Amino acid sequence: MNEIPDDPLTERAQHLLRVLVESYIREGQPVGSRNLSRDSGLNLSAATVRNVMADLEEYGFVTSPHTSAGRVPTDKGYRFFVDTLLRQRQRPDDAHMLNELNQRLEQEADRDPKALVAVASQMLSSLTHLAGVVTIPRQPHQSLSQIEFLPLSESRVLAVMVINGRDVQNRIVHLERHYSADELRRAANFLNQQFGGKELAQIRLDIVEELTQAGESLNQLMRDAIRVAQQAVGESNLHGEPEYVIAGETNLMEFAELSNVEKLRRLFDAFTSKRDILHLLDQSLGAEGVQIFIGQESGYQILDNCSLVTAPYALDNETVGVLGVIGPTRMAYDRVIPIVDVTARLLGSALNSRR
Image (tube, rainbow, N blue to C red; front, side):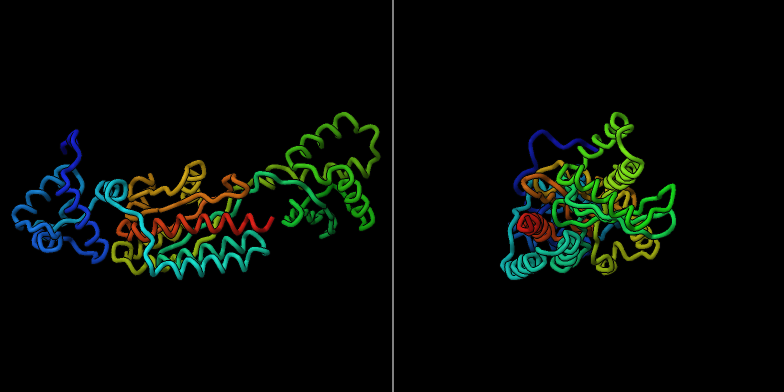
């Protein structure tokens, strides 16, 4: 295949490529030269259009699935369309739906961040008719407001921690011996007095120092309390793999290119295992604005026929998560991109209003 010439594609070639991509997104059928000639508005003959299409195919922007069936865009064609041809715009009929999203998020603002994430995921799916995905926000600053212990069994205790004054996290802690309810209460009082209001990262450091330097001056209950706290606030507990919420996976069954049963099964398995999807979302954490992975750009074979449009969202001007839409490469990018962009901003605003 020849390299793309130094000069960009001619305006005529760009226009025809845009018309072809938009037609294929809309109809889902290969686009013939005669239809392109009619729809382009350029008063070109079918023969002239065929010559332009031959050049675009030579450079890898389009391909012919069958000998005389017309042409369809390749991943490269979609990428060129998105990067240089697309004019992002919010369609008037989306304004009402986006206003509804804003209202829903404002209504949920007093609830747990996971509730906000679930609403955002559902609304992304509803607005785009694709699969909406939102990661649970990571909290860059986590301070311990209060800790309590509830006995579960002879050797297990539930540590209930209030983080940043309002977020509750529960951790099961395994003990070497049985502790009475009074011992657990006194241990919690000691820890709240020692560590209340401190950042979790600082608490981890203080725990190590307490156990190594002040160990002899502490009574057995205090030493045990610190060891329990060490388990409760350990990084393995609080910094596990981030989760995400996904909605609308079944919408993907409506697209012929994704309707193969085996392909759908593997795609849904990827949603369930989360690892590959999370890796892609993580790539957007450090990016600014909307990121788009088209087909093979994802690096995962299971997503070869899919595109992922993502945008990070922020809390106190610090990125804490990513949201996006997963669908076929034949998605309406001009509609999906602004929806993802605006939703990320609205979710960040709703999270900030909780503070």
